[in-house]
Amino acid sequence: MTALARPSHGRVIGGVCAALARRFHTSATTMRVIFLLSCLLPGPQFLLYLALWILLPSEEKAARTAW
Image (cartoon, rainbow, N blue to C red):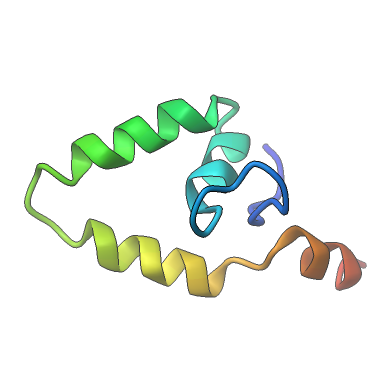
């Protein structure tokens, strides 16, 4: 598995779905559809998305702080 960081290219809003797609070796479109379908269910999906957007570093920052 790859490191979890928001990509600088290929993101739509915050890059969270693109980061998760890279992590789980799937397409970003598939991850976005899964997220949109999960929004039909009750739960804190939007809060989780916002938290990941805030907590996940972008690729540029992750590359600069890598050991």
